[in-house]
Image (cartoon, rainbow, N blue to C red; front, side):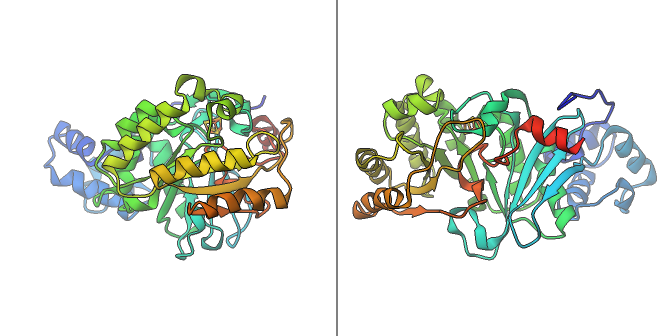
Length: 367
Ligand code: SF4
């Protein structure tokens, strides 16, 4: 049966532990603190495939590690695309659930980045509870939060699969990252720390549908990560129609949180805005979006809606898309419009799911 959880006795992933956790573990084994440093170096910098490769640890300690932990690599249930194109990995978790992780080559990067870096779009939950009306992940409903090791392991596992380092990460995969905030924070620590994977904070973007209190909490964390808002509407009237989260945190409450964010962080906020015909694509919508973006000095990414089977929405015609963009540019807002087909990755958190395949569909195809 599709997406049925499987009971396993797999030990916890070693990739979910911070340096402090490893120090605690080493102390519990009556080991000196520097053992923890050695372990994180093997895990996060040398990215070993087996505990036996940790050659500066005693045989006994390696055995204890392998009894208590797994190395947490995620088996690939299916991969689509190639080294040169957007490549989607469907990973199977220990409990039999599935998540998607997407590798985006430099020439098709999030945010128009032409730096030559590869970007990885990472999932934070299995499914999503927020039920945005245009989103395929929302259709499948919420199953569970990902563990820290499952978040970090998406990066390590894709590096192992492709042999290329990942230096850019966007949390725009399945799920609402800020609904899994404590684990997200710990994963960010492992990914960003110099004892960990040492990926620059400015190269990590967290995307949210608008969980205002969690934005404020994340703002207080002293890492200069980037924030993207799945906005898709500049008024309560529009957001209420397509994003149920807006009922809980209306747009003024969201913007209050964004002002707090701006006081802590130096980077521009990005607004993701899917253009949906007849819903949020009028000249008035554009003018209100321009007003709000200017106030926060935010950048806008416009993404014409990609049709999802089972959903009613349509993309506006190209001249309507151009007219919308022109309003933003005329107001001196930094804005981009992406039209690439099949490049649905930069649409929103959770929008990366293959358009023609629901979660159940993918799994039935594979198994
Ligand atoms: S857009 Fe993001 S928050 Fe909304 S349902 Fe999809 S994954 Fe969840």
